Image 1 (cartoon, one colour):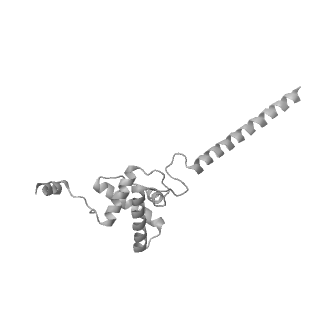
Image 2 (spheres, one colour):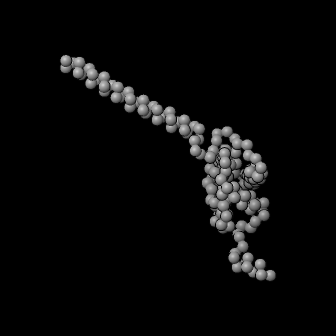
Image 3 (cartoon, helix red, strand yellow):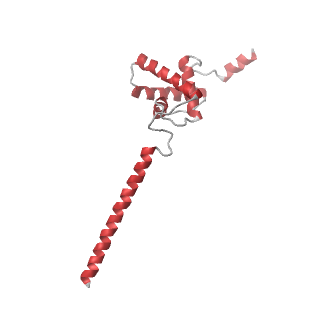
Length: 151
């Protein structure tokens, strides 16, 4: 009888170990599937088809990136952080748009962003305007604006 009890305990212990391993395997599969499908993120592994104003903005950015890459002799990997820093500076100085990461800039440029946020688009538009010379590096101060409006 003692040996039968020991066999049952061994079987229970073995089953318990199997359940632990299965639970681990299930978590791995679930988490791996979530990572590969980019659940909840705004990016995709395949390029998106931008349309309308977003496509026009992307075209401007693509052209400016190519010019900047040639002019500054930088790889794209080194260009994205520089552009992100320029955008951060512009967003702070002009109090418009938001600071965005180099990954956000890269994902937009590579057309991996599914639905770009409005703040991100504003920041990118601000950078494009600055590169094209449509806006100054420094915004007008409030005093200068009042002086210009009074005349």
